[in-house]
Length: 79
Image (cartoon, rainbow, N blue to C red):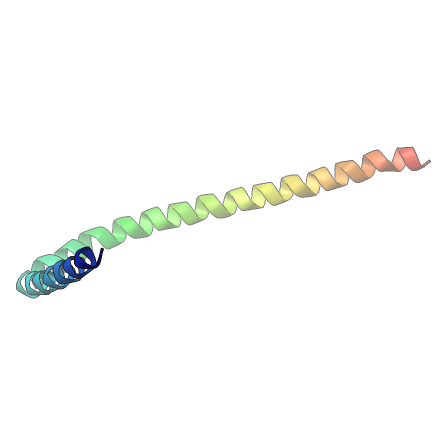
């Protein structure tokens, strides 16, 4: 088990160094990639947040509707 951990650490360091070298070498292409990805991510994150919060509002409204209907059902029984 110890050999695999050490091997994993060595491979991780080699990959980090290689990544940094390529990042420095291809900096302009990296920036262009970010310029292409960021607007798409913003649209997807915004759509996801909109969907989530609209569904939260709907579920809260349904819970309130169920509470009021259960209260109205209990009122005739009390009389």
